[in-house]
Length: 234
Image (cartoon, rainbow, N blue to C red):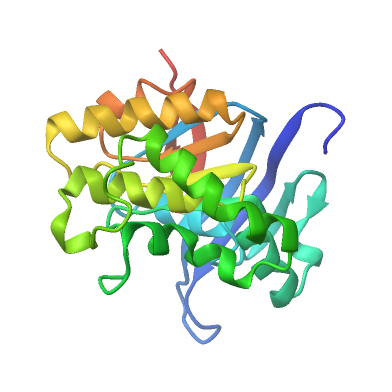
């Protein structure tokens, strides 16, 4: 763990798309700097195509930057091979997307436990069913453990996705437009849930969103402008 309380630090992160043969490669990220403390929440906003999801994918090790450094708990992710990055994703990062990506053939409980199947932590795998039930009760789904995703509302499916993201006790939760497919009431409830879990679980939370209403609930609001993050917190 970082001695200065910093969970995540990005320094000069760039991302360029396009082959070397192109005369005008597309530079999406132009030197992003970011620091996030344990238990802190931030929102990243910006117009479509500004690179918000690209940045989140890079932070989540789903994509690699063209340049710059990304340190998670003082570990430089650029130094890690794909196997090590996969372990980071499974143990230290939790993901929530606009679409829940639940397995339709599995029950709510089975969906939540999917990330534990590949963990090498025997104790975590052993305790996961108990933790899953506790978290599902926490989000109001204790009576839906054996339901299939097709029988749930949109808000319920997203709550299952949140619990799935938390099951392996991540340090950092990454959410990409988590309320984008929800009605206003469900979106408000999910936002409140994320903030409560952020504090209760002492998680770092990064939310990419088009919703200023959601963004303003976070501790800081950052906007991607010309490939760099600018703090626009009111």
